[in-house]
Image 1 (cartoon, rainbow, N blue to C red):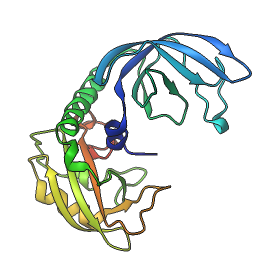
Image 2 (cartoon, rainbow, N blue to C red; image 1 turned 135 degrees about the vertical axis):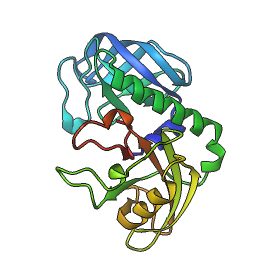
Image 3 (cartoon, rainbow, N blue to C red; image 1 turned 90 degrees about the vertical axis):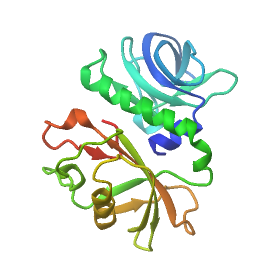
Image 4 (cartoon, rainbow, N blue to C red; image 1 turned 180 degrees about the horizontal axis):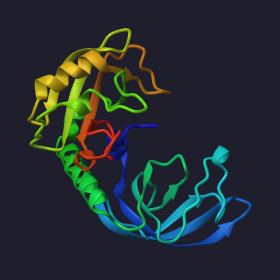
Length: 235
């Protein structure tokens, strides 16, 4: 799957939707429709109806089908054709709580700032690719070394780095495109020491040595055990 940043940059519509109703099931095609309303729009134009792959109340995971129900809320980053949008369990979307929470409000505020930056600077990223990483210090019962940085007071809730990697997918060079504005050299040193870059699947990466990494500061996790404060996920 593509990263959040890649999905946003290629999406026609990005926002938070709420499922209003599901109907018009087609058992032969294994599709149905869902009426939606937008709570937030980060990119593109609102739409009112989604085509959903699957059957109402039932989804085959092996067929990438999706079961959505009224009152459910999702962050979606979708590409469409002629104003028509479809989803499956393989679509770039994240389930949210049925009712907004303070933590979610904080997360979505961070996303909005990151999305705005991506929009304003998208030409900087042409020819580059955002990717994930594996952190060697992240265990089942411990926070990563990145999340243990003391006296961390970021000026903005995300940072983007261009990284060069070696044959072992370890970072050899880091060039900040935009930084947190706090403990930046410490963060870069930890990244070079602990992170292994995951090259995207299904793409020719054999000759690629540079990637982009987007990190978030998840302030809602400050007092949550085993939840990351700095990571490549936004929650």
